[in-house]
Amino acid sequence: MEESVARQNTGSMPYLVATSQVLGVAALAITGTWLSHYRGGFSWEGAEQFNVHPLCMVLGMVFLCGDALLVYRVFRNETKRATKILHGALHVMALVISLVGIIAVFQFHKNKNIPDMYSMHSWLGIVTFSIYILQWILGFILFFVPGVAFAYKSRFKPLHAFLGLCLLVIAIATCLLGLTEKLLFAIPEQYPHLPAEGVLINVLGLLLVAFGMVIGYILTREEWRRPLLPEERALSIDFRTLTEGGSPTEP
Ligand code: HEM
Image (cartoon, rainbow, N blue to C red; front, side, top):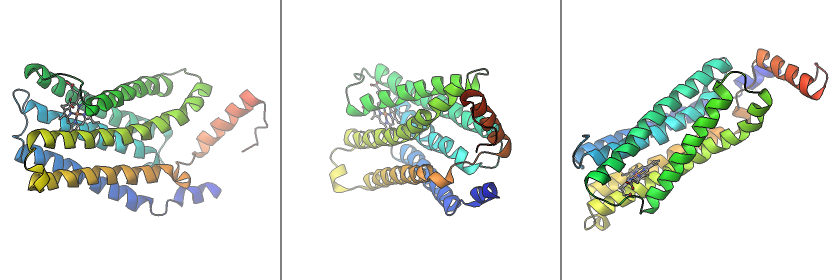
């Protein structure tokens, strides 16, 4: 009974999840439109190779990582295994896409003889990406490799969840710095006069921040956490009984 109440008590969460998706898709659509309409489109060679970078980073490190964070809130009645697989699949896509974006910008700099790693954006970007790789490696070992002790998993879980949200925040901050920097490089004279391209990118920045805020709000509402399914609850009680010597009837 208590459990079924917990399962239904999602309040405005479905509307907020839908809002996050509208904001995320709008941000992606604006990124694609901006790069193809104002910045010459996409190619793996020449000046347009740069354009692969922002598109891949917004898609991989913001949209897909943001959605991966929502999986455990949205699919609350599916088995833990199914939600874990979906969370992992979204992160595989995010990792591959953002790696392509990182390679694109480094290759573009190399081909054009542009110095590497001088800006605040590039420093924050490499820190974000390195934490993401670390999070990936630890998450994979702890949650996907069979035989890793339950005690390690439960100890690491809060840090994993905290880092996931931190990564989304710093990825969005990195995008804002990158977008501003790009406009200052591309249209330094026009930007202060608020041309259409400037307005579009400012709107994109606001959408990315709004996407992060809605996801952050959903994730920090304690009562919207995924409740344990009956079989998971039984397993967790068994584990506590084994490790702490408590009674099997304890909640
Ligand atoms: C989380 C998302 C992002 C990450 C992790 C990231 C990471 C990086 C890194 C590591 C570099 C340095 C490349 C080098 O020094 O050769 C770089 C360069 C650059 N990025 Fe991003 N980026 C992200 C999003 C964006 C976005 C959305 C834009 C928008 C246009 C952008 C624009 C730029 C620009 C203009 C450069 C070249 C100048 C510089 O090195 O600062 N980035 N990015």
